[in-house]
Image: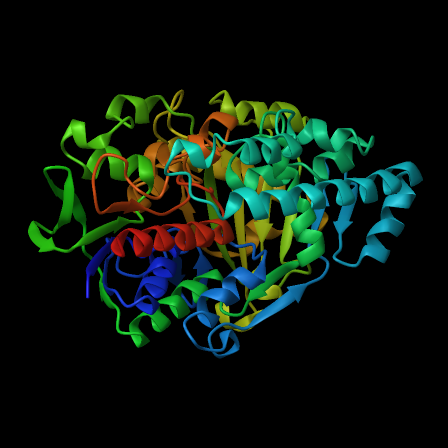
Length: 495
């Protein structure tokens, strides 16, 4: 039985661990933090339990699959419920748009805006669903470890059918004319840290997935998914080591044979790293020749996603709101452009998550959790760190903006607990290059074949899984990355 060491117990590491155990490997995970989850982390304070990173559950079948393939019923591990409405969007002029999973309600609301836009929205759904099926069948589940897997007539034909060269915003604009509706159908590219004005149009599949497959909630919060994957991994015989800070991947003669953690050597037949690819390649691989084309210099020059300022609020009163709420800036395009021109937005759009609307297990009785995520630039250029004074000032400005929403006029008077994560915290806590919350930006030149792949091209028995690897960022997509890399490992082990 071959032994595999996995670096990192994030979503990709845990999902890969379960799959590899099912395949018959001996698996041990090394995690630097005191708990599993990676960015799917949890903070606890005074009875409040805050999800740190991801909060939106889409494509529930992928969440269920990791339990099903291991031979158990997902319902014995995670309790998922469909949210409707999915979210409210507040605009600066005090108007509001409610996005529902109920197509009847949604079309009725769109007709009030403009019947032509209701028609255009339905045409958009039809068009993007066809493209989604092409992407799912021909690209999302495929490995591109060899050029021929991408550069072949069939693959290039299907790539042309995806029509990826225009932006997500331009693609949406060809179907609907109302500016607020355009924003409501294109902002979702920010889920993976890319601008709707420059990100490939294929990412318009995200709002389609929300409507057709729903937005769900896992009881106990997103961290419960990580916790239950850990439970299943251990039940299957996996070994987990917490507080293990891996500092080096052991490589000799282009062959990976273990890791150095807390200054101790641990040997294995295979190494799979769930540490974010830019960090893993630049920091854990010590010999520049073993890095392949992704040298330290190249890693620094690559394009990175936006980062996040996240404010975790424990409130001493209940508020009437939705689980997911968004507030858009008056000048939405300027706000988004600022992110990728490395200017901290003066009038930011932000996202609010209140799981205690449907789950009272996350806070003391009669109290509320509100998580506020403000997209901000990564630390790649411009501001390379957040000072304590600037953080305090900016957080206060965001709280003032929240207070302008009718439901939250008095929110500053009811803060019992407040924690803040800046790009610096994401960089330090999760080893994210430049604090880029979603890893490498999925521009055309860093997607599909052009994105870091599952198998190292220079070091044998070294593999990668995570949001900076193909197919990309987002919890369900990283779980697809785990599927791809474990199939590669199994295939290579049988040679």
